[in-house]
Image 1: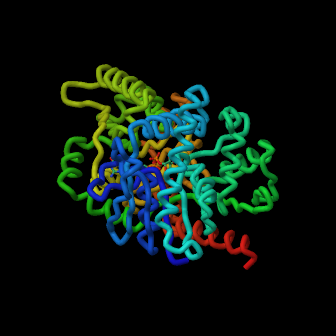
Image 2: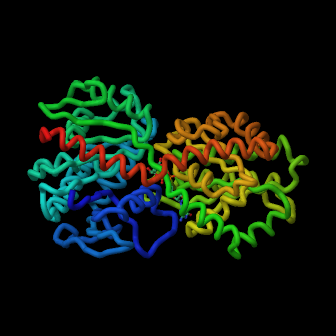
Image 3: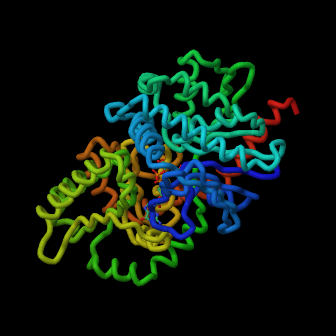
Length: 465
Ligand code: GDG
């Protein structure tokens, strides 16, 4: 393979390290920097004549980029509308939040076609390239690449969950979506559960046949597999070690006045379970106030998808409950809940994680959740903190050693938080060692390598090699 082209909705901005970039950026950049990679996608800019604008090419950290703008209408229908008001809630098991319209559907298809056109135009050598398309915004891009006669290996990785059929079939025109998925050579998902659902959805849709882990469509075979995304463990540990001694970390430590720190780090998103977590913290304070003294819970929650109404509503709810908890429990010199919409650079973030006795990673549903893995990598092996993890995060299928909780059960979360805060050093170390073993053997390099190998293998099989 001469070149690997990665296609995703957003590409990371070289100037920014703010948290708004999300997990995909962190993972893909690590994978691409080890290949002759080209990353294509939307540059985050809205322009009236976007369709006439040629992609902007540049290089950053050894990776080539080609990015292009969208029009305001494309953004509204494709990104806000179909991607984030239809697919995101549905694939996170929230059909009640789906707001479908045909306009959004058409907008999604049009923009997926435009992404495919941009990639097809960049292809240097069709025979010797491979294309790796990312995530729910671009499910149909492979299909449109094929209609442009692109014959090279094309893989797709879904970063978010795949729900079971009774949920998936709520998606209007779900057969077309499955047909479009069948344009790829390889489809990767985060967990065994997602794979089980994907194969069942394909079979039940009647669009294609399923043979083991292979989808058979129109004489073509599409391989599927589980590729749990991960992190660069060494880089995260080094950042945590440096970050823990930064002036910000020192100030944070001093401000705790000897009390334990609980941390949460999430994009502000309803799938992350932040509201339930705030309620669990309130319950913990009610149950244990005099026992722990000054507990502090630091929730870092940079704003995301501010154009989507549900996110504005969630923000409002969080502001209300954060004010309620602090109003109820703060004293003149202590505020238990520090709720921030500011993003921090990664070193600061990792340093904060290293100082925290407990991490609350309690999504209601999550593809994987990289924060869980980052927290483990950031710990001091001699005095590690405790990871409290939702059993509905993809990471829960891998992270043996975490305290698994049900984020819908606020009282259980409060009890578990109490147990985490009083856990012996011996148990903390034993749990951490199990967790660390998993993330060290299943890191980001393995994720990128195994997916690209699987893609090449499926494509070779297709060409009868
Ligand atoms: C999607 C799926 C899947 C957060 N705040 C700041 C900051 N972050 C970083 C975290 C982490 C990333 O953003 C978030 O990744 P997650 O995996 O937790 O979640 P999503 O953004 O929803 O990602 C998810 C992922 O894709 C990868 O496949 O795991 O399930 O939903 O790396 O540390 N980074 C900085 N400042 C912040 O304030 N620098």
